Image (cartoon, rainbow, N blue to C red; front, side, top):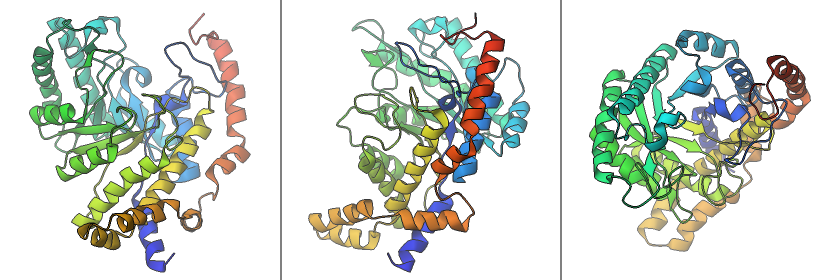
Length: 399
């Protein structure tokens, strides 16, 4: 690898940061149940402490996404969370409202036919906006579980219109430097239709709501044959790509470790971003976020594995020779063009990444260094005892 390529990769790594999710450090599971881990975080202090470990051993995970109902106590000022995050060397990242958990949302939140329920959901969004301002967060990230399970159950066009109306007050409440990120999902928890089912619906809705609204791409929220990098390319070209939730899947929204199933797809997504940066002369500022449910993997180790994988795939994508690629594309030399991507993907990027870590006094092996620290065993011992004191049962509930 040439000195110029190494320099390009190091510059890309200097710009790369990825946000960890608070909920990724707690006990999580499936609709059938969950398997508890002694070292899993119990409260927000634990979550931030664990996220601090990920950042300390990688050097590029300085922010943590927070879930309003899971991480903030009622009436708790955001400044308290900011101070707690700073204690662990972190900043608050995206604020995530919760519009799917309460029983009143059985038939929807922002799209509910009951105006009182819609108003309650809208107020929750405004509370989330206030928390975003208090914590210095630039992002309010919305995933909506609204939809229906059976044909004829609901008026889809009415729901589309009312959704835009209920989101506009949130848009008006945000500062000029803040954004709404609209996530989409083709199915689940409803299985006939979801109100924001794909990137096109999210795009159109964002346009209706206002200029502070953009599209969030969750890599698990697509059908199996979807060309996600094409979606990314279109959103980049229209300047509507607001951010990512990275994970991987084998079947549907599995929330598996990023890159564990299809690392080449993740590479291709990153490549579209680098290619756009090369063509425009400016690498876009995109919030990269992890959104995973580590059902049986150790929480912090899984997050370290994810972050390192993302960094290495991002570095590989930066190594693509875009001058050569553009030359081959213009001449329809498809094999040569494809080889530009294949060479970068299969290249041994480890020495370059290790040198970058060495220059910044970071552990060369973040996962190995974390294991040697003994943090997980200490946390498991302390949290197991604390669960017993709190009366938390094996089901995760209070006795």
